[in-house]
Amino acid sequence: MADYFSPTVIQPPIPLADMTPLERLVLGRIFDAEMDGEALYFHAAEGPRDVIGFSVDKLRAAFDASAGIASTATSYVAERQIAASADDTEIEIDFSGMSWETMFQDIVRRSSTVRYVMAVTSFTCSKMRPDGFGGMAVLITAEAIRGQSTNDILEDLLAESEGGAADDGVHVLLRIREDAVRERIGHVIEADPTLTRLTAEAIGDTDIRAACLAVVASSELSEEQGAAEFRAALTAIRHAAQRLQNSK
Image 1 (cartoon, rainbow, N blue to C red):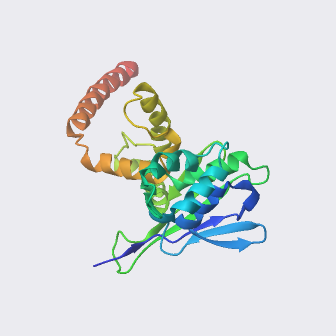
Image 2 (spheres, one colour; image 1 turned 30 degrees about the vertical axis):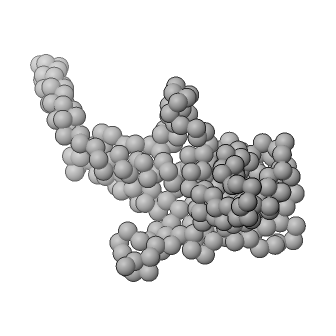
């Protein structure tokens, strides 16, 4: 059995003053946190955690202390802490339904000193599996969350290689752009408010990448390819006829 890991580091350290008490609590459980002066350096040796246990009293205290400050963490926890009964002392929350990247984006938007946050992740495996190694870098700004994996880099290099090899006679007809998918997500949610309670910002780059790979793997485009080749054949005939007419 192979174990997969995604060790991650966050840079720069985040000033304590720029985070709400709830963000400090939640991010400090999703990641490990170390004090760096008046800031926290976040990292995760095996990967960010999804399911986290909290003391109900500590969670409610941090939630109440963060009231009045708009944040993804507050909205997400508000919907889930009501599951705790009056007798519960511990509560477990699954954060896989939201993106920790959006919490850092909330911080960047409010901060007067942090212009961006960078997350660097390496994909490793306990066995030398071909799908077990790689990495990803994510840049989080107030305006956008952008990421690129080692697979993205290799695909770009391959596309450039194929695009430059005109003698091969192969032409790229369709590529799914992850940034275009992100733009479309907002339109889809806006068009159908009953589709999901998630905001567009809650959908992370890793979610989009996984979705694109799944769609590519499940798509059957043989009919579209045949139609394109047929149109190309007709166009080639017309082009040759026009060329020969012009040569007379």
